[in-house]
Image 1 (cartoon, rainbow, N blue to C red):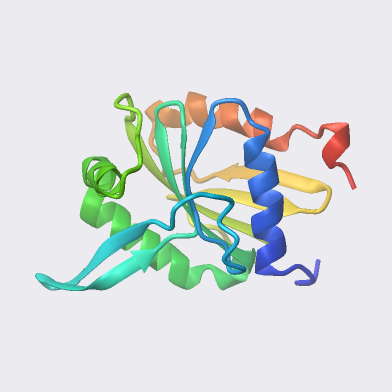
Image 2 (cartoon, rainbow, N blue to C red):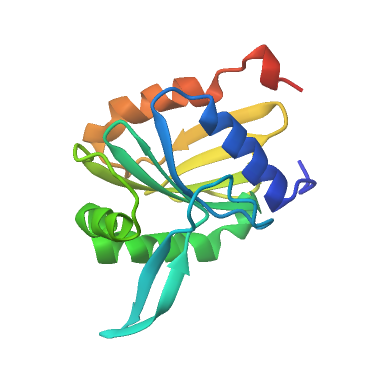
Length: 176
């Protein structure tokens, strides 16, 4: 499969799909076309050493049951290397408690039952090896799949598998 989908198209497909899944709560959305669908852009403090060095923006933030997900989106999986590094840095630096505080300071209400922070890369075209410590979503016209890295928290596996069933379901209204 060649890269014949834009980042904006992947954002749109993913946004439509996530809005159809019961239990998914979109907390923030920052597509390249600046059409945020009424959601805030989430700014995550960036530090170099011990000094503040601006902010990171993430493409999307959502909650599903007890899972908080930080999402970066690209047209193809081969274009996600920098996003993987960024999300690893954010998750390592802030963990779940720190991310919850960041969201609350930005006026975003989060469920107090959250137990896991899961990094996600989303793409239209799968054309590279995927990180084992991430959940990955492919959103391409007529194709929705969720891939779970082997290094994700095992105790979150049931909820992630449940989400996968909804994400990969092919309702007639979305088939192309």
